[in-house]
Image 1 (cartoon, rainbow, N blue to C red):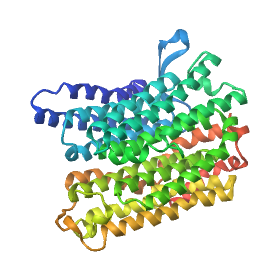
Image 2 (spheres, rainbow, N blue to C red):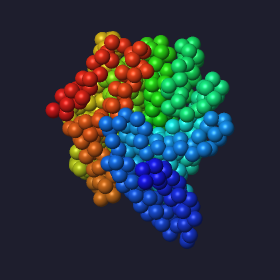
Image 3 (cartoon, helix red, strand yellow):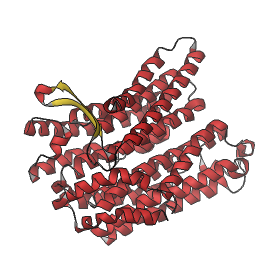
Image 4 (cartoon, rainbow, N blue to C red):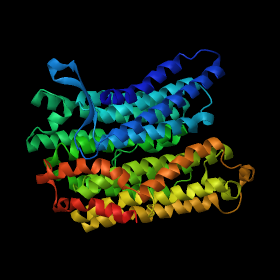
Length: 511
């Protein structure tokens, strides 16, 4: 039953997408049926993912729920899936955000609703497959599969510049993935297999590790994105419809960080040690550059997009500290950021849909008309700047603990994200939520029941991650610690010796 459960989670959304395409009736009836079908499909998938979580044994750092089928066995390529603690948390994040994104688009996506539901479900299947793939070819197939629904959702249901934004997203990601394909083929020629656990145990020479890691950094650095490979992000996040923006910023960008972790830090530890100073510098550059640019924005959604870019720089710093604390913090920050950034985009959409503008200067006094929204936005704003008691604080604390072992200057510059984030986020909150009521703001009405159903679960999880972070760290920390004390041991800095302190730090952060 266990292997079947993971396969069911992966392909149930795809089956729902196919059924949605076949929904009969007129345009409105068909779209309504497809929306309800999609919602129930994603909710059932979420329930199955919770069962996967309940049945998972965090004490075993190896793969669980494995399936291995002979696909192209004569070429060393198999259909191999399974999850460890790292994969599991991203499966849960995907399953959690998808039904909320579908609900958020219930009203805002008014044309071709059936097709939009199908695209969202296809994206969910691709993400599940990507996070559970244990064969590099299979990973590449699912990684490329995310491009199709992602670019179509931007290009069909996006804003005025949607075609350009969709083209940028597709070309940047596709060009980056070509480097992954080259690295994949090189590893296959060297070993005769693309099985990821086998490749993890293969002792590649240090020069080859360097070239392979460079290929994967270029591939995943686009999706993360790393500075200066971010040119596609502002337009894509701004022009995409809100559900697509939430999925792209909340989950899809995490595939880049996940790839860098799997096929960089864990697979090529010697090369990662050589690359670390450069990636750390790029991460710090992203934090500072994106924060400054965010403050200069006049479009709310574009400001939040740059905020996301800044926080992804923090994740890159955590991964390449090459310490247990830093890696744990980066993973936790990915989860927290996925929840918070999706919530912020949903809040922006709630205001923009009513006021028919995203211009910061055209808004003011929203809190008087929408007090419930104002309360929730305050929570998500505080989470975005790393206030203690929220999940972001735990992730950033662990990242900075890891960064201190590398360089005090890196820790100080990376920690500036809290100060800079507070500057532009609190400024945004003051200008939009308080002040004089402007334009049509006086006619706004507070959140509907449907919008509350989207935002309240996100608020609960944000606080849950801040108050009880060990719920999640206990899943992936054993995998990280095994890597630290195993094949990565020779490639890690002295800070790795402090890895046992991770749970102590988590306990302290939750107090």
